[in-house]
Image (cartoon, rainbow, N blue to C red; front, side, top):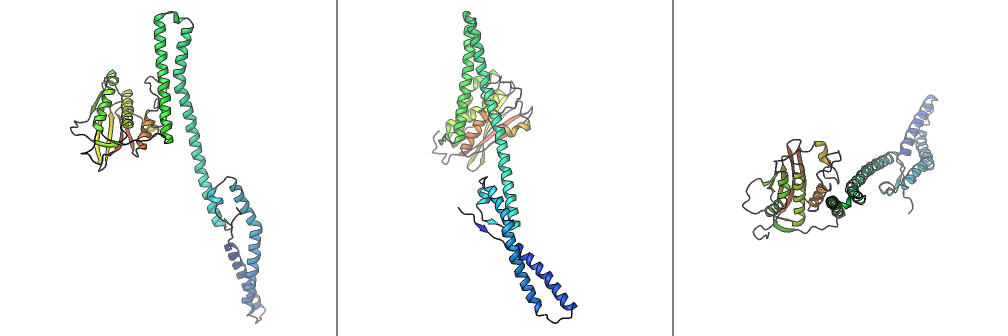
Length: 354
């Protein structure tokens, strides 16, 4: 495609006008000084001077300045910038300056974004490596110990094989979560909305996690008695996973003899908000913006005593956003945390089936 040229005559016009004005006044002064009466020559000199100046200046601009401008556009075209090279080339300095400044600003944003993504990629690869390395080395250590002679002791053999099996289970758990979040991010996991009673679903999750909570003497409870069902429209299975991940997270980082409370409130006419509140250790403000990143942990010591894949909150965020809903978090150190997310109410509560 040939380069489209958009010539500008502003510079030549203004320069020619100034030159002709100066020379016309100089010529008029000369006539006055010589006491000549040829005043009719003044407009002729003005017009001729203006035309000659305009022609010469415009020619020089196109021959020399334009060549340099075209080189700028050609250099930019190497970067495949559609925002700049797709427009007609202009010889107007003001317009060109604005276009170049806009181009530079856009490129700076692109570069900053790429730097952020590069840092994120490095963190992600480092975290994946760490998460997989720990259980792999655990399995390797137990197997090597058994091969070195511990296999002959029945009690040690049974204990080490059991521990190695737990480490393999952790590996499988991490890989499954990685596969799930990859599908969520790629938009390959479809949301299948249905109408169901969210109160009943929360009760089911309480039952599933009852033993896990009991180990830390944490009570799972509603904020009040819900005598009437609250119907929502969402993917029941995936919302159950959201509730499970949030409650498991609350149990992990909650204090012993603590409480995790779930409430369901009307937000607006067609929305409800589900809140999961605990009185655990809380989260420092500096970490809150990154909580939903994959493998991000508030504890930088590398401790993995609480287990988990490090993907729970990232999965929660993707599932909620796949429903076109929002998730929120509020926390204070030493006081506790509250995670909340919105859901669409079922359109027909009376005919909805749980």
